[in-house]
Amino acid sequence: MKKTILLSALLTLTLVSCKENTPKATVETEEQPTIEKTNSESSEVEEYKIYTQDKIDEMNKIIGEEKITDHNAIFERFFPKDNEAEGNYSYQKRIVIEDNKHIVMEIIEDGVMDDSIQAIRTFMSIDKSKATPVITEVKQSFKCKLNRGQQEWSAAFCM
Image 1: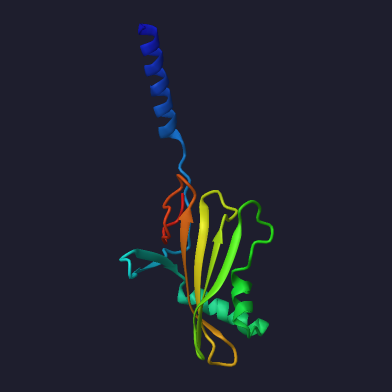
Image 2: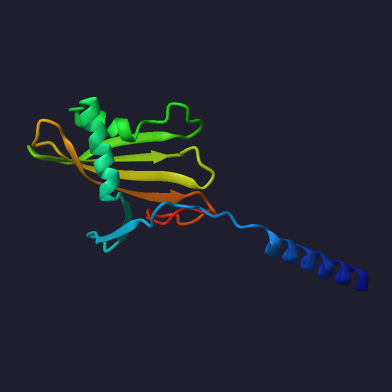
């Protein structure tokens, strides 16, 4: 009995000391994301990582250089379907809002090929009142794989 207790204590001590010395993975980013919180009818809070104006300007420059005029082509240029994904990958695209001047599109990629991210939801707003469409806003939220972070949509990066 004493040997069993001593062996259990020694094993526990070994596991705890190994866990403390395990290097932690870090994600380096160029900048902190801007987070937008909105209240929906169900009083749910949604958060998004909002692209910076510099990033949006860079995307609009590419649209001009490549002479892209179709909003679907713009969306697929920057957020294409992963044709090499395996397993339960899905890619769903839909128009959220559309009128003569603006369009807001949403894409949800689920089962992405990443060790921590389960799904990515992207919203892109496009001003289509000019000859060349202009991206006005891009925002994303993420769902993490089990034990890798949040299971609801959030701007927080997965671990």
